[in-house]
Amino acid sequence: MPETHNAVVSALRTTPGWQALRNNLPPAASAFRLTGVRGSTDAAVLAALHADQPDRVILAVTSDPNAARALEADLVALLGDGVSHVFPQREGLPWDATDPHVEYSGLRVEAVESLFSGSGKVFVTTIRGLQERFPVPAQLTGLRIRITTGEKVSFQGLVERLEARGFERVPIVEEIGQFAVRGGLIDVFSVGAPDPLRIEFWGDEIDSIRTFDILDQRSTGTLEEAAILPVAFGTTEDEATELRSLLELVPTGALLVDIGETPWTTSVSTTWDSAHRTHAELIDSGMRAPTPVEDLFLAPEVLLPRARSFARLELRSDDPTGDASLGSEPPPTIDRDMERLREVLREGAARDEQTLILC
Image (cartoon, rainbow, N blue to C red; front, side, top):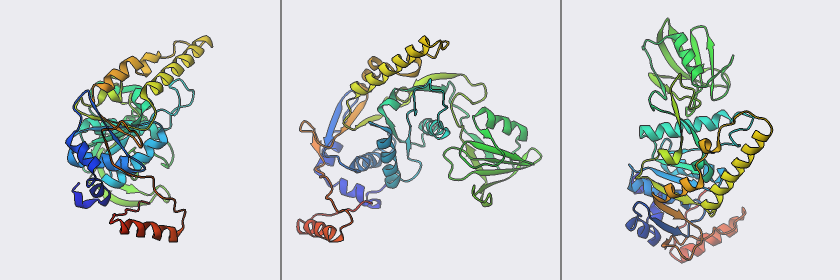
């Protein structure tokens, strides 16, 4: 991403704080603390780091799911689609009776698949999302079903593969994670796809691949090839799986970015203790052999040393002990007062400042 393509990242690069970070990027097992990071400047720092080191994996860790979603939205605005991915934490504890929403498991699949394919470089999760373990195919191949126009594919075999990958068979496709069969057509809405696919067969040959609108079911475009991402790990045919956390999957040369004010020690201990209490209550209630806590979460004494083994960047809003500061200030209160906005702009111009308005 050239500097001239994004005014936000270009402005960030003019600050002494950015220059200090760029000249002192931490090696493995050490940290650099950058302060004065407010609002969306955390996303700008990540975007600038990616522009400088486009082949490096960056793993940003926030305190809560809302912050993770907001950061990912900012990253998409700065980097475009496909570069960054959010890895959401579970909505509840793994023994909850309700199944996780298909979007959450699908986003996890998409993030890990992009990590191993090399297409994704910036990942966003929470402290708890980093602690959670989940089933990953022992052989990380065939995660996507790849189809091409003119390809010989068993119609019934594709139906079975979709079912094995966690898709729900329905009369009409209306949501992500669903597929429908009508005559020689298979409609499927894959995680990570902007539109659902309509795959038309002629016998056991794919005659056409089209996108369609879920509102009126009309075709909107044609494709020569497409990829269908499974809804959840552990559902792909009979592949063996292993329990891993995202922290165990990222390469050792990744940069771990700590965003937020919540101490990791407190957060991971709280999750660990809560999971053990719930597990004990389930045992006492007569539930037969629920999955052990150790299989579903990294213990604090495992997670924290592993995290400290990475090169780490800590982003903080205020911290007198920081190694450098961006010098950003809280945005002035405008509250739709256009005269107040003009006043702020005039004051900035008088100080020879460049003002960027982010909406």
